[in-house]
Length: 535
Image 1 (cartoon, one colour):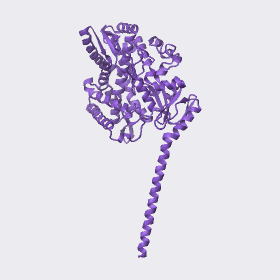
Image 2 (cartoon, rainbow, N blue to C red):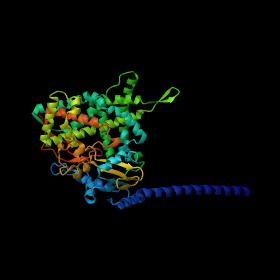
Image 3 (cartoon, one colour):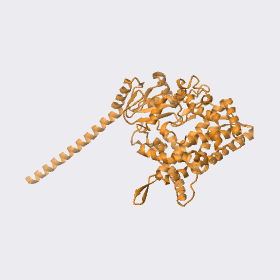
Image 4 (tube, rainbow, N blue to C red):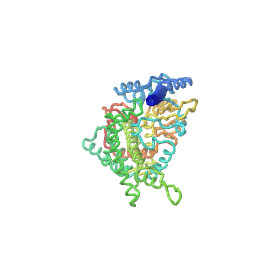
């Protein structure tokens, strides 16, 4: 009996000991998590704020967890309720009212808070080039999972994976490959020109919102040039990507909380359905093409064919007479295709849209561009040689449009470790951001007419246009400059040439000038109403 009591007491002691250990571990985990959480949402941001202020950089005071997100969102919502007062290229205060207010209060260099993360806005072009050249120290900012899925592939990768993908993708955008895609560009432009001809011939002239047509044109070009299909065949993919973009953009002005994506909200469920449908559609396109190549069919001259060919050649010997394929996986290829669809379509449609608006406003430059196009091509189909080398006026116009209305709002990078940048010391975890709109319209760089549409400033090249400061960054800078830059410019030059061969454009009295910045692209909030006449 005594022995039994002792055993029971020993067992109770062991249970108490185990319980104490478990409770201690739980307490340590809870306390550690609390300390880390407190450091993330308060202590670290306040230390970074003091550090920035000590260097003479001024900005907003940090607010717990949300930072400036609420103020940015409310000011933007209010600004977008009313259009601009007349036509002006000075739209920064409407598109980004909160940042405009900070620039007015603190000068060109300042900081604000995206949740607990400081965003350091800098203005010097030389710092843009330094940040975008030091790619191992400044990485793409981390974004929530929805935004990461919106822009997958090359734009999100770092280090070796980025270098490998860039190497494999580059051949698809070589000049010789672009020549092969010109028929696809021609066909897409011809479709929209025929549509506009029917409208104009019926009424003598036609007023329409050209923005949706230009979006369809760019979508058609991507479908034909990238995948060998036309817009109708790829329309479902574009509809899915458009809906996916709308869902992802709803998260832009919110704090990213890890794990939130696993909560089965209506938005998260729909996003997952769209992802699965996109994956299925692109998998079918890619797999069909791969099977054709494996069956011995010739490599097609579209982007996907060139990319698959480049990928299949990325073989390394591993010994014993065996080879190892180190190229992209099927999932990688699908991600790159998603990126082709979204970035390729939006960039060019945005550029063409603002170009037609500005040429409709500035009839003298429209006439000069048409004269150059007719002298170069007459009524013949534009060829690659002429598009690439004989359209100086058209190129100047497109550069000026990109300067005044760059497709992207900002260039930004995450600081990977404490480092120096120019005269500043920047802490790990901060975001360095450059507003293209403010740099591209800085009178200290471009002159007193910086906000005016004057393509002649590019007559002697980009460097002289910005007084030797090379402050022109519509496609980024450095090793990670947009791989599709030549593709976009070639498409824009050819489309504009074909438009000017057939039509003249006049800005409609119903047009309302109201630029709006989505997460990625600058667009007219109420469309682009233009009166089209036969040329």
